[in-house]
Image (cartoon, rainbow, N blue to C red; front, side):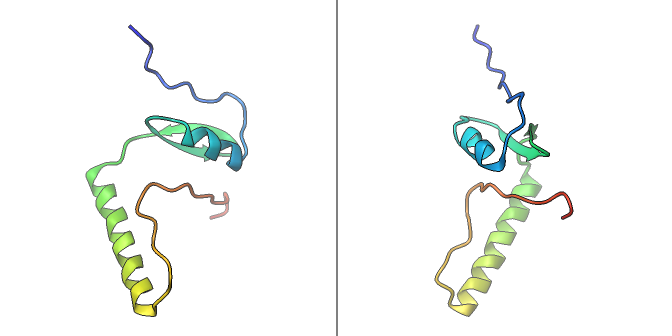
Length: 84
């Protein structure tokens, strides 16, 4: 039987290195915190509904202002600072 466990990187990563690594993963959700990669739990229904609500609100605001852009509708990678 093959080992299906996901091996997380052991070395610290930059945001760009993490984006590259995460984009090559077939499954799972990950976050980069202080240079280290951590596995996140899967989306739950309540969280998925909250994300949909944010996308819908962004779409309404964009449409109301006639901005030529679209809100993200798939999982995106976001960078935050520890002070946020």
